Length: 463
Image (tube, rainbow, N blue to C red; front, side):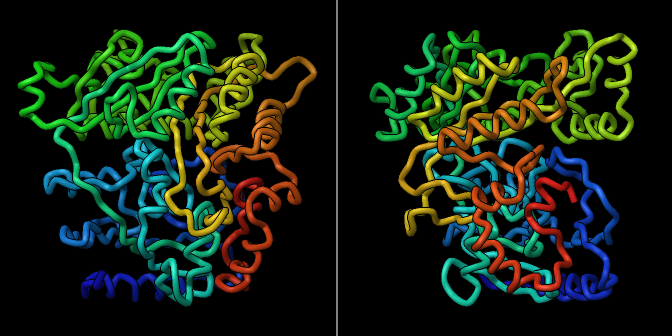
């Protein structure tokens, strides 16, 4: 897509700002929001790329949009939905950025059809560690960068602009919540849907699920509907989970539901899945007093930041004689055929529930493992399992024991885990799991002086 003059000027300014930073000092992106659960250590120069927060252009004929790397999905959806379009994959939280979903991965209920968000990116302009701006595409001079950007976490450079693929957006989404008392049966249903795109003859366009216990799992099957079909079928008015009602609880009590497209896309953001309960936001009295505009993921994340910096809850627990806790915040991809095994192990081992399920299959089949820094296999079905909480540190144990056990189990089952939170791998294991040899080659080309931290230093060392 052709770059308009204002965008070109922004690129020139970004290069100048980067060049003006002290050469011997690490660089870090200046952002007001983040979805990382790592406490960053060390001092660094801040690079302001605030000029790349908007939707630059939309080409409805080509079904693409040129968007700034710091454009949030909330901003992108606001621009696209009135036009009748949406990104192929919209990550769950409003303030995830398009560049962040590319270099840090993302997933949602369309991922069993469209893969991960980076697979819907046609090209990306990158300000590299050398200070150059290059356009990376699947083929051509910078194809190596294009293939290794996913899961690189900005350690090669920063995404200035991305051309992303679009698809028609529905007016509303009709949901059916199907309950399973056996985890294995639920995974068999996932396999059926991924193979056929349907369940019991009904088409499925959106698919995710929740595990509440070993005997209570729900799959949520969604399909797009328009107003006329809603009227004719008598589905009633769309539900609203931005107020007193809580979406994830509705799954247990409603067999069918109807949501406007925007409300469906952000159904998890209002209560940060179910994590808002940690702040009391799900208590009826607190919820009435908590302004609706503050019931959103970035507000909860700021509260987590207060805990990370000042530890008020940890101090209160110690005063009450309670044990310290280990934060267990992870998303892992497990091969579908091993997912039931992982879930049973997790429920028997880790006292955390509910768990989120999101089936995924890579779109790209051009190579056996087309994205070397997160080497899921092409043509293989996976299930993302998300769990976000804290557990008591056992007597005689240490902080990190549970995360290490999870990492070991995920590797044993042929899975991978995302790197947005705690990682405890030693360097050799990390490089084996996350494309170390390929990473080193691309790092040497685009950031030979190491102005940006390495992936291991960033993911494990929290630099």
